[in-house]
Length: 240
Ligand SMILES: NC(=O)c1ccc[n+]([C@@H]2O[C@H](COP(=O)([O-])OP(=O)(O)OC[C@H]3O[C@@H](n4cnc5c(N)ncnc54)[C@H](OP(=O)(O)O)[C@@H]3O)[C@@H](O)[C@H]2O)c1
Image (cartoon, rainbow, N blue to C red):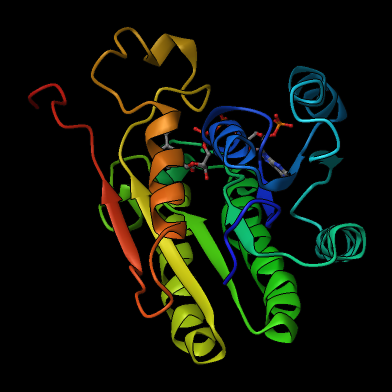
């Protein structure tokens, strides 16, 4: 894979939090970066903040990744405009929490359709572009909730356990074609993911830039090496 200046990345959920930090880190390394987010306002705000410093290298798209057709069309547009896709960061996601017996079907669907189905649509569409190129790297932002169940986490855990399974099966399918697939499993990161009421003290949490650094570190591995699962924890969480 070429991860030199001018390489092309697609980051889902790139307007805020972890995705935004990944977008900025890749831009700082000279990449051409396309990102998508759900709301057009969020895309516009992010573009307004980044365009001046990175003119012509940052592109925003308002896309709901729960729509298979919208994701396919996004990937077609990115490949057509920038000629290739060297890296996909499957990051867009959300959480809805509550005891399983009272979890609304709509909340379940929103979480699973975003965190799992959306990631699958993007992975599949981008993998077809990368198969033609013969190289690429797909990074799936899972969570420690992909292996540790939490009370009230039925939908979120199901989506992230599923994403880890998708990531590792895709890794086995695609590595023979020069495409590397990695799941990053962060612990708590200080973003808007948690409502302000549940963020009294955030000093101990990871910063979004820590996850972005893990992505950049991955891209520097030589072609023979494939870290397929990275667990990234706060080093000093509150004692439970
Ligand atoms: N924060 C944590 O503690 C933590 C820990 C482990 C893993 N993660 C995972 O990391 C990822 C990013 O989390 P974050 O904390 O950075 O969240 P965040 O700050 O809430 O940002 C979420 C991003 O996802 C986008 N998004 C949500 N639904 C979408 C959809 N249907 N289509 C397209 N974009 C959509 C949002 O777009 P808009 O701006 O348009 O709403 C936003 O850009 C998630 O997958 C999350 O599960 C987070």
